[in-house]
View 1 (cartoon, one colour):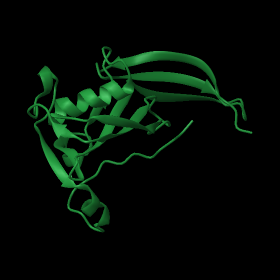
View 2: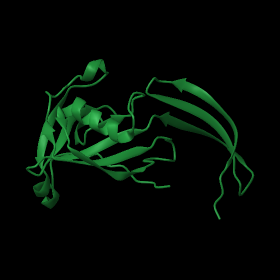
View 3: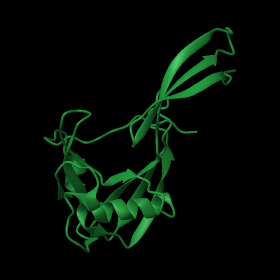
View 4: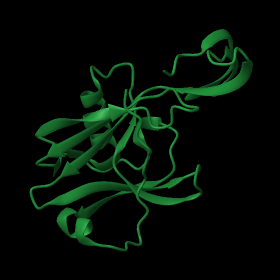
Length: 176
């Protein structure tokens, strides 16, 4: 049986505003040895697959510094303190990044995308009957951002493609 490690110490190493790096020392329940580890703490985030009545997926194309290239990805982002729920955050992010809104939203689940070093949880939603309600906001409400653009992708046709010139963001899933 796998057991939890005992946390011996934990201290904030550096705060980078949107994430913090923590230094921890933990004891193995199997060997009793201690290990120094680093963990990154990030607020939870939400992402939404919004589908229009014409079966188009509402996507965002933007440059991502982590992989140093432009990506085509689902709208989403960190939960803000004023968000009443992860679903509310997904709706807000969709409108901020694309100008679209959805009539209905379905909770698809949640996961810890990289629990080896990250503590954050991701929430996934499906939005239906997506329609443009405002203009796209390439620089959203003064948030630090690279330029971005909204793009509609024919959803059913995209699922049938075997090769695509676009980059889709993917995360390993880890459910609790």
